[in-house]
Every structure is written in structure tokens, then in C-alpha cells.
Length: 79
Image (cartoon, rainbow, N blue to C red; front, side):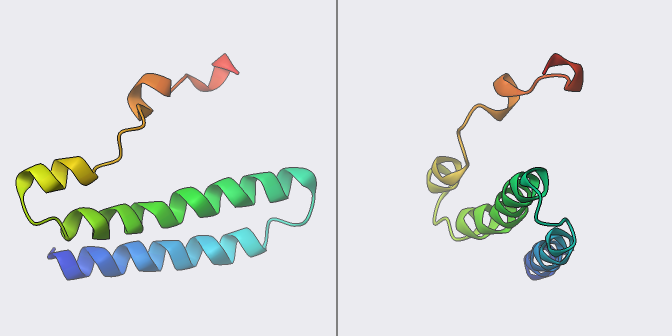
């Protein structure tokens, strides 16, 4: 798979999530999940495109998200 195909797949993924979000409803829980799902589904494509536009290896690593995702992950039962 080349970079254009992967970019297209991210775009298709975001579009399918948008369709899914429309079906979640207007309850408090539906709106809350919808917002988070939209942010996370669309950010992966944006992050990929930003990293793809890097001009060097140092620029590439600088553009990767550094939010400590692995440190913040908890098992589902830990809520």
C-alpha cells in the first residue's frame, strides 16, 4: 500500500465514522460519545498527513503526537 492509498483509507474511515455518529442520537451520552469519536477518527488522518509532509527524520519525529497515550491507558475495568 502506498501513501496515497493509506491517505484515502483514512479519509474513508473518517467519512464512515461521521455516518455512524449521525445515528447515535441526541441524548447526553450519544452527544458525548459522538464528539470524542469524531475527534479521534479525524485526527489520525490529520496526523498522518502532517507527518507525511515532514522534510527530514527530525522533523518527522517532532510532528508525531506526544501526549503520553501509552502512559495514560487504563484497563476498561479501572473507571
